[in-house]
Length: 269
Ligand code: NAD
Image 1: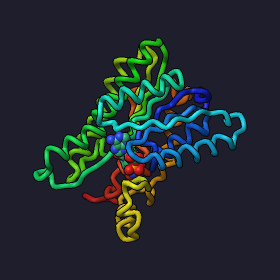
Image 2: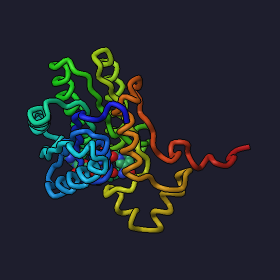
Image 3: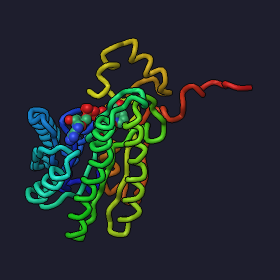
Image 4: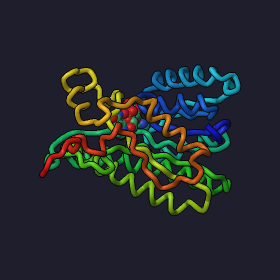
């Protein structure tokens, strides 16, 4: 895709699932990739190896650089250090992908304050702080940049039993729009993707159970869950110059989940 070659990308939570696929895809497109991991350096190394291999399928992209950066996005000091490290090593952060995310299930009236804070601190505050540090850096160099938030269909669909997750992704919509509006004139684009049900470790319980999987897929008009690679393709597009006029948007990638499968047939007279 146009405009990705030679760009420096930082992807949070890039040791598995969607984040890993994004790191691999961006390397394949010729980006230098900084792979953030919280506590799984082996997962980081695995991502790095797969990404460099993919990049090398196109000889021209064989020279892409990679970097493993440890950091917990719920910790402000880790984020400051992480962005500084990438800037020192690569010279800039041109693309930030806020992918790290967690969820916790419990009836809303039983959620502990600690659990609530933990989810918000990773999914929403972490995404904001990573964006804040990246934007500060871009402004200091007067450099354009791109931020992509990995949201969810639960940005708009309420998710009972997952109140903190729902709030975090709902908040991400306004994080995306507010930053997009505030920094559009400075050449910084901010967008989000909202995956539907995607085959990643976060969903291992239903992926491994054929009955539960069929139940999940029955709610998806296209009849199947998505892949991490399908999410990564959209991120590559939004990060590229092909999306140069797109900012403040959330792109839903959900096989039609947000069209509500239950309304496929006439349900009222
Ligand atoms: P995943 O569990 O494979 O990936 C989450 C990643 O975030 C992991 O690599 C984990 O180590 C990392 N992480 C967690 N806490 C962190 C922290 N404090 N600091 C740094 N990294 C941390 O699951 P995934 O499905 O690939 O999730 C990626 C993103 O996609 C999440 O934001 C998730 O909410 C979103 N999403 C996933 C789905 C889905 O169906 N899989 C649907 C919608 C949205």
